[in-house]
Length: 456
Image (tube, rainbow, N blue to C red; front, side, top):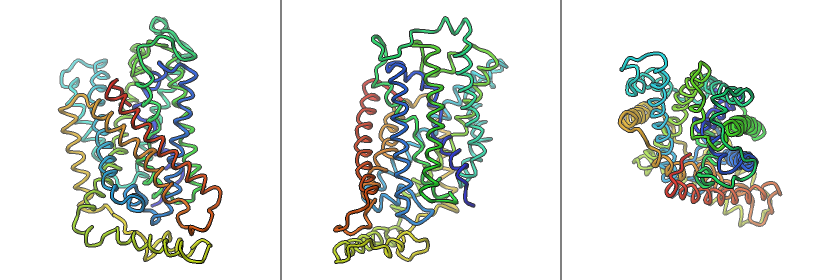
């Protein structure tokens, strides 16, 4: 069953607005108000470009089967398994961190209602949430089926936004006593560097790992429809980040910490806010499990004997050969017949697709859940590892890969002697710039992680 644009927008927005939204006010500390707002807008634009390029290049693979793996096999086949491994590790690690946050947050919430030791145990809360909520949701095959849980999660973010706005407009004495200096421009004195907060802005909109799944499930896969979906999601995410980030920073100034919800005094509204964040984190786990499962399936397919017997590369070589033949011929027009054959569903020249179903679906999902649970129960902090994996994995799927896909594929259906339309030429160079931006972000984020212990 295909999903609507509203369903795709909700899923994309939920993926973008994760628990990292709590750190957005802290990101303003070394930048100041004006530059912080500028960073939110710039990073939102770069992320939307990556999403748009994913939508644009999805037409080069069989309809409904777009993925990083399939497009890598068209552009850089030798690196397809490497990027899928990065995506799988990144999403798996983030999912584990969500369970760790649940184990830290829920006992704090329960401490306001009870003193029973077992109700204050992190192991109890992780186990209960894992069995009752996380496991059933992770066995759902389509992201569209998670639209209702995503709506609940977005409502939680909206509540946090209302809480921040309310305490900014009507601060109490305790909040006033906590307030530090608010810098409109770059602060002259601060104990936090820009390099440390930079990843928070850059990775605020990371939702690209689910974009291809959203595209595949859309009933209307036209570029116009997908562009509307992207624009609406990014604008809404930007509005939430601006509201929570800017107003949270203005409320506490340079005394802001990495988790804004913990600064508000204990009250009914603050307790509800903490419950909302816990709900947001819990419901975000399946959105990490989905791309991790798909990437692991691609890796298994890559190394399986079936892959060598029915090699995807042979199909790609045939198609590239056809393109080269058309490019070297005397016909200077677009080889539309071959393009239609490549893109048209059920065409004999389509790329082979990797389907995840049956026992393999159950096996991979169970494996992800098992190892996530074991790690969450035994590890209390994955900050450094997650930051390194995120700096490489998030950068790859958000900027580098969409940039490579766009640069290699856009206008590739034209003969070499034919000048592509201006729009496609511009998109190719924008794609190249996005990939370069991704490399710069990776170096900067890794430097911040290793030398300043920054996280995102």
